[in-house]
Image (cartoon, rainbow, N blue to C red; front, top):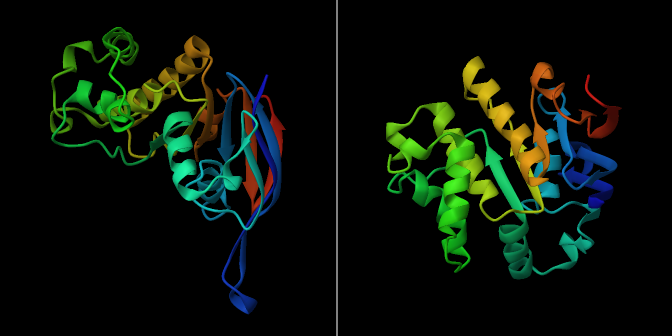
Length: 226
């Protein structure tokens, strides 16, 4: 079942001689439960692609359809609400709220959307994340790998249609990187979670269902693993 469809997505910065084409007519789709990695050199357009797909940046042209809803036909307020409910983000920087403990950080998107946290779902997530014993710890009391697992839990709690992960292992050592990657794979398998992840690590990308390579704003589908 197709969940994400990107059509002729373009992003141009600047004008005249200083004009830069960050994305050029990018087209691809993803099915529900698919885990795809995006690789490419620094400055190739990977992050721009992720930000446009997530509605954090507005493309110059093209469409992003999530379960048939075109993000950029929505006004800014409706797009913000749609994004909050349907897209989860995991960044290289963890962006946890320092005053909230693990459990509260995970539940925060629900509270932001005026929803009552489902304690059973939180318990299930804490188990999946391996953080049940750390539930009352503040971010400052956690390792980098543990903080990133909290960030993943926060992205999963709304059971979004799409998770966008921008270099989620970039600040982690090799063991923590492997743990985070394994967790994303389990989320994809256990919850049929659709995940689009940027990484500079070809070894991690090889574990994804599909790999895209971005070069000078152009996207190429490399198929299953690299």
